[in-house]
Image (cartoon, rainbow, N blue to C red; front, side, top):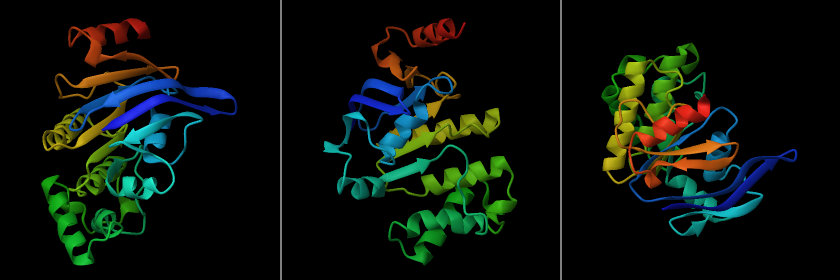
Length: 234
């Protein structure tokens, strides 16, 4: 479904991504792992179409991300951005509903679906709170709800989604992402940790100084990548 071909990106002459080749199949959950500055967020920005590669190209379902294809691509996305990006003077409910309204849903349908998602995540108590009054953890869960409410999305991108969550919350989020994978949604998440807590057997791709350093899909043992990651960090 998602293909990176010799993708490179530089800022002010410093290469952030260097000849990245990566293939992710439909219905696969892949965690892009790496230290701060390894290129994870740049890779996400390219995949969202917010920036273009300096070299190489990216395809989704066979279509190159460029020009007119970007609008159609974004309509099929659900995104959990790094850090909450809610509208402070709207309620949590309206923030979640807006995710559907901008995609063409009626306000009534969007509000009903948004409340159902808040209830499913156990945060419906926040529905009438202004987003600006929420704690960082509460904002993160509303941001997660805003992505998950897009039930028709075929590609879910999560950039450091558990950064503001406690260990229990991080494991719950991992299970929710895996549930989407089991429905056939392609899930790409970034994390400074090796993998996502609470999941076993997930595919992990490690970036190191903008290059793909390791890919667990090519490893013989599920624990091998964790050992190599620890060795690189020491």
